[in-house]
Image (cartoon, rainbow, N blue to C red; front, side, top):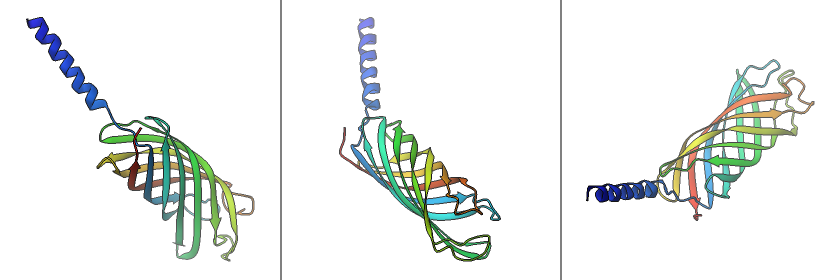
Length: 193
């Protein structure tokens, strides 16, 4: 009798553990985030801050693997009292690896694409560039989504190393910039797998 109770208790406990681990995977996710970027331009400029935002869409292939497309923009108004008016527009795509739990979803991602740099000021001469250029860009990092409901989550933190490779026309800047990007926002989830 005692052995039967022990076996029944073990089966019941394993059923509870298995049901607690069952997590639904959304078919798609759409997020909107505030973005803070620490830019390291090189040349005669010291590092500066850029603020902006981005939106992304993720299609989840399975519970772990998703494919992300991201569009975002950052703006810099004034650096050390000099009015710049620089805008960067990033378009990045790549895989995201999720570790889904009932309440938290930590993830890492590797995105590649480009960055459109425009309406900047030449730091060497102080004259407006009034040009735009497309550059290679990549972002490697991760973050955490916290589930509020089945369809809404918040993103308290996402930290990435954002690298861009500038063309030769911006000769006063580093050809390769290594920047730090922090973001936080809200995520909307659709469907389930």
